[in-house]
Length: 261
Length: 258
Figure 1 (cartoon, each protein chain N blue to C red):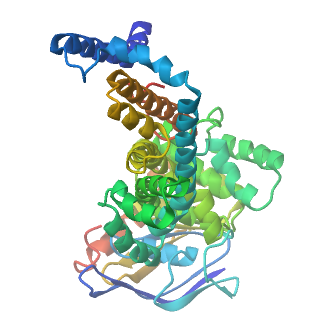
Figure 2: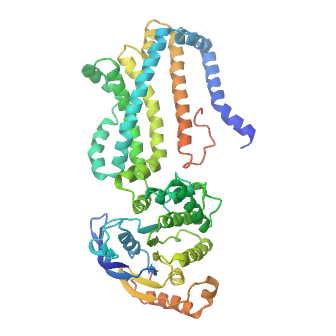
Figure 3: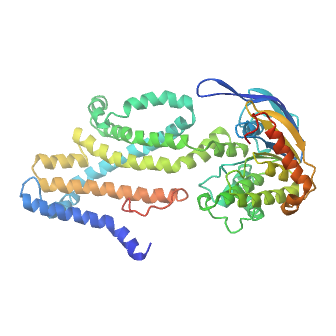
C-alpha cells in the first residue's frame, strides 16, 4: 500500500463517523422535533454526564459488571468449548443444553433471575455472563474441532499427554477462532449490560439513559447513546489490537479497516 | 527391529458396514533398513504406518518394537506426514525445538541443535519464519527437522512428498537420502510412486487393495550412496521399476490402478 492508501484506510472510519454526525445534524435541523436533538446539542451534553460524579460512578459500576461477567464467561467457556470440540461425550452432553439456551435472548431471562437473585450486581453480571458465554463456547468448539488430527499425533509422538495436547496444541491452534468468539462476546457483553440495566433500573449506564428519557432530557439521552457507543468502539478496538498481536501467525492482513485500531 | 504380527484393521463405514482395510499383515523391519510400503490409494498402507506409530489401534494382531508391544505413540517413532502438521503458531525454530523442549532439553541447547538441523535440511536463514510464510517443500523440510530433533529410532514417513511438485519432490528425495546416510535410522516410508520406492529403499513391500494385503516383498539390491543421475541410467534400477509396475498390472484389477 502507498502512504496515501494507508492514510485513507486509517481515516476512513473517522470520516464515516463525521459523515454520520453531519447527516444527523442536518436531519435534526430539518425535522425540528423536540425528541430529536441536533448532533451538536447531544455532543454538548456529554460533559454534563461525564462531569457528574454520580453518573461517573454509575458508568464505572456498569463497566465493572461487564468486565467481571465477560472475564468469568471466558474463563469458563473456552475450556468447555475446547473439551466439547475434542470429546464426543462432552459435546453430546452439553450440545442439547446449549441449543435450548442459544436462541433465548438472555435479557428475557432477566425477570426470573431478578426474582431469584434480586436487582443487584449479581443478576446483571449473570446475564452478561450468559450473553458472552454462548458465542465463546461455540467458537472454541468449532476451533477445537477443526484442529488437524495429525498435529495432535505429532505432539503425542513427542510425548505430550492428552491434557498437555489440549493446552499446548488445541488451545493455540484454535486461538484465532476463540478470539473471534471473544470479540463477538465483548460486543454482546455491552449489549446485555445496557439491557439488564434498562430492566433492573437501579444503577448503571442504561439507567442514566432511561432516567433522562423519563425526564424528557433528550439531549442527555443521545449523549448517553454516544457515550455507550464510544465505549463499545474503544473496547472493540483495544481487543482487536490485542487479537492481532496474539494471532499474527495465522491470518494474512486485511486491507480493509474492520475496526478503529 | 519392528515386528508387525498378523495385523488386521476393520473400519466402520458411514453406512455402518464393516470395511476390511488391512488383512493379516505380518512384516519384520530390520534396524537401520529403509523400507517402503508401496500400493495404490486405499490399500491401507497409511493405516499400517499409523498402527506402527501407535496412533491407531489394530482391530486384530499386534506390533512389537524391540520386543515390546506398541500401545501408543512415543518419541522412539517419529512421524512425518504428507500434511506437514507443523504448529502454525511457532516459528521454524520453535517447531524444531518443540520436541526436545518437551523432553526437558535446556532451551539454549535445544536452540543450538535446532539451528544445526535447520541448516542440515537447507533452511538456514528461515529460522524466524512462520509456517504460513513457507512453500510446501520448505514446510516438509521443517517437519523432517522437527521430527529428527527428538532423535526417534524410527522415522515413519506417510507419503511425505506426495503434496509436492515433481521438482521439489526429487530434491527432497535426494536430501532425505543424504541425511539418512549419516545415521541410517530405520525408515518406514509410505508411497504410491514406484520410482520413489525403488530409489530410496532397501526393501519394497507391495500391497494390494481391498482388503490391504502384502503382495510381494522386493529387496532392492542397488549400491549406496545412491545418486539420482547414476541410478536413472542404471539398468538394474530400471528393471526393478519395470518389474514392480508389471507385477501391479498383473494384479488382476485389485492392484492395477496404481
